Image 1: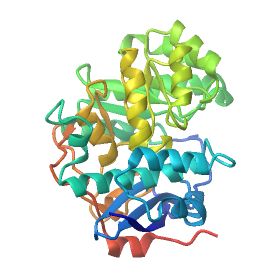
Image 2: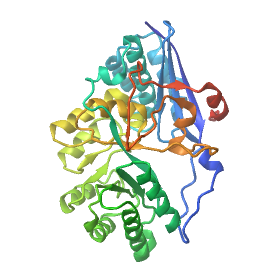
Image 3: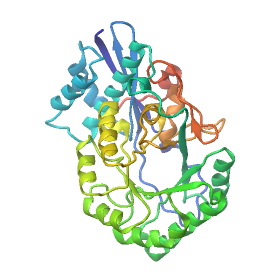
Image 4: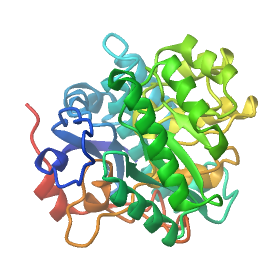
Length: 385
């Protein structure tokens, strides 16, 4: 079996075209949306077997790196040699890579190679990783934002509970630049959601790098009675000292890692005791090949890995690895609404499992179980200058 083609399809970010969100008065404006939401990668073999991978995190540059370089690195090679091909791509891109878009591009190819590996063996990927450690994958609903009006936020949180979720995450969009009112609003939004879901539903919060150490400490004091499961990415991701201070000084676990590339930063963060929960993103960190190395590192230090971003590539690993307790879940859009951002996978990929009673079931289909929706891909794929 040989690789005969590698195709990269940038999928446009329809968030750039939509602003139909009910915002609370004074809600902060978001960043300018990137043109590309995700990049689909398809690796084709001479046996007629194709693998599907994804580049996550709004990285349109991955298409150019794949088409301009990495494609030639893997053409003619046996796609089942995943370790060798990972190292070949990593070394070939070292002059401009090691982090960022180069590793994200590698991730998409690597995920597609694991899809081929499963299909060629007639097995789901989780079997190749060691088999089942659980029948179903627990997931948390990941879409609540404090930019919603208070009434809409409560309604959305209660709807998650009614749908069977046992855990939800709230994105907090204010920070130190909003002054004392920003802190108060973060605490109030957290309490509002907690009251809406009740004591028996777990809650996580995600500040997405907006805070500093002082703001995080003050926020944690303001919600310490709520039993928050984790605070995610409160400060800039490369502030190792700040994360170490927070982890040492707070009873609530600090989670981060979605903006890290390869296993090496995770080894450093473990050594410096920066985090209580590791959150690599399979689309960014180097694919399945690198993600499983991070899971092994974490396991050696009794740390959980809760992958950033759900999707099947994460769910297969959660199925296989006992120190991966829960997955992130972006609910599919309501009927008649177009998926956007992190949920666009629902439109261009078929086979993604739907959550029932707060968990998803990974099928026994060979590979990941994905198929590309060619009609939707033709509609939403774009050219990147």
